[in-house]
Amino acid sequence: MINQKGGVVKRNPGKPPQDILHDTLESGGVVLNVISDSSLKCFVIEIIINDRNACEYIDTNVSGSFRNPVERLVMKILITDDDPDATFTNEYIDIDGVTRSKEPETPVNIIEEAKVQQEAWIKTVVNGRVPVCPSVADLIFFGNQDGINFITYLQTKFAPGNALMGNICAYVLDRLRLPYRGICVMVMPEVSAPAQVLAAAAGPQASITLYGFLNLPNGSIFQGLTVDEAQKNRAYSLIISCVMRLYWAGIVHFDLHTRNFLLYVDQNGRLQGKIIDLGNAIIFTNGPNKFIPDPADIAILNAGLETYKNDIVDNVGNDTFIHKKDFVVSLLDMIKNFDTKGNIQVFPHIPRYSNPDDHVNCQMSWWPTIKDKEAADDAGTDHSFSDIIDNAYNLARAGFMVDIDSRNPGVSNSTIQRYIGQGRIPSFSDITPVMVGWPWVAAAAPQAQGAAQGMAVGPGGGARKKTNRKHKFRKNKTKRLALRKTKNKKRRRTSKK
Image (spheres, rainbow, N blue to C red):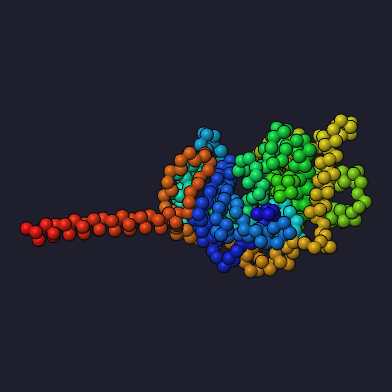
């Protein structure tokens, strides 16, 4: 992959999504890694496709055209329940013995999450720009029995030698004992560095959370990049710019803590970032919602949207740092205040949201941390704040404006809409989940020797089953030839007598 822009089209638009998933998991040398089992509502599993011919999704290249086979996917597995207030009485315990709370999700809410994420991707990827989030490649719903079949398939094929995968499969199967529960699999392109960056980097890590990156020691190496305060400041600039661009798409996240922003290095050796987990994100341009129920607040957000759009266009080439600072700080303060207010509205039982400390009462605790750097900037002892704000403004403007004179403008909005009409890009306009079947049974995988914890490696099951049948045929053929030779010897002895 030349560049992972984070959005895909289907190679075969008429192919059912469950068939695409099955053929991907059966491809030769496929690798599954558990990325996260700590989320409140899901398990996140990485799929690495080693057979380039088995890639079912096509990503955009450096010029923004859909031409690169996607070799890394993310499979987000959620347990579904039609009851929005449903909880699990038995919580998930990982292989280290840590107990984690888990909740099911309703199919309607999952579809709404996919719809918001897809809109954010479409509005920010057009004309060759790096989008603020990955797209949703497929959304696959299984009823109870087919959910059991699917998880059993994963358990049989990928859990041997992989304690974490086995633990997840056992937990999900136990939750599926109740017949009204099912499974949803959300498939996305992985937020990842390009293949050449990963090949040269020490270690297989495709991306890192903002939390993890900020806690790396200065002087350490991430995907060939030397980590220092300048790179950490750029990471802050990236998340600010993505929040600004997300707002310009008419969306507020409401769950953007430092573990929901991923960083990676692009083909030019530059740090890049994307927002993930839009389960609580809201399209405020559609009107009042659970996080912003007051029409007056919606009016404030919409008015601010027009003001900021006009401001950033009108001040091109005439924007001093003072203007950039006022622009960014006022916008981020407004979004952070709505983040706090909205979370209090939806989660009144969580005391920290009503805490007067700005670092505690919201999911955007990283923003007050950035603002704390301003005092040192004013004193002239550390110019991190100026660097962060200036770069954030420039990054956001570059992701908002379109260079109409560019020779490689990338995919246009009309092209994306055409692909949606052709079924190559899902739109999730229908909130009714379509249940599909999982008729496949996996051949038992051999015990992995020295398999790393949290990783499963295995060849395609289809090829293995064919080899087994061939071996069995040869074995039976050998037995028949041996029996025929024995009978011939007996006949010769009898004739001599």
